[in-house]
Image (tube, rainbow, N blue to C red):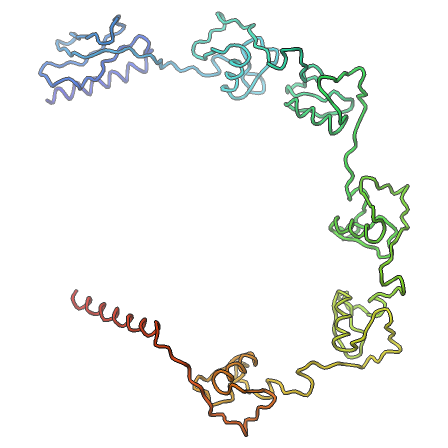
Length: 443
């Protein structure tokens, strides 16, 4: 038994050594050597080359006095490794060149792409292991489908640079790309919108044609020190903004309704055009005419002893109508005739009580409930405290009518306890605690 195992190990060692040194074309392997029954007289041998006609022929080895019977098969794969550098030449740029007489001068860094090119343009049955340049027809070439039938290709109108890229046929144009379709797109965008490859003629076409790039707002608007785009018109507002779209909206609103960037020309356009605002048609009044500005460049309310300030003038107008004059209008306002000491107090300020006057505060500056509250309720918000009083003490509570000397401060309405899922949940929790104690005791 031990000897049989040794022979089996030696068999695999011999196979591995031979497979690395000899091609598998003339090698015969014994198929399923361990399928045979165990015998006392067993040998694992190899002998090559061997000629046979039938796959199921038997070979008996007698090199060492032992023999083994089994079916024999011939291997079809070869272990010979062939690299791309053995077949293809490498140019200065490190790319593999096509070994055929290729009119395209095809070269690529990836060897697989070179093989695909050869199968597509030279030999459909090309194989890197069977290729021999001395026996192969290197002049073979399969033309492209689009060249059949007399159709033109971009090679007929474009030259190629050192990298094999197509160069635009127009004068003073340095555009170059690998794809001919991209050259066609470039010509339609920059030279001729009606370009057609089949009808193109270098002799009759104006090769100096050039379609300029579309204008941008940066081409017509200058930038100030803050990096904002300035209005190109003679604008009395000296309008500027970092967003170009906002500048275009300003131009259409204040200067030219039909403004177009592509058609704009500062030499032919009247830059003094200005469309006045609706408020400026009757009287050229603006909030900067009646309000001063503070350090933050905010409009300050023109009334006396009022520190209200906002950046937007409309908010100043809303503030004046709410706190000073309900009939305020920007057009008719006159600071000399108007009473600047007028002030309309808020509802809480119109003789009414405040939360601070009724409720006391603790150290945390929270309002304390004035009733004899078992919850000892406190809150920073006076409104929340009023809601608590209405739900727990007095449902008819009124802050303005409240008097701690005359009102009954012992009023209290307890919460309505529901004997629902909450109570059951507590009972279940108690049961779980008891079970855990029992388990601990049992352990």
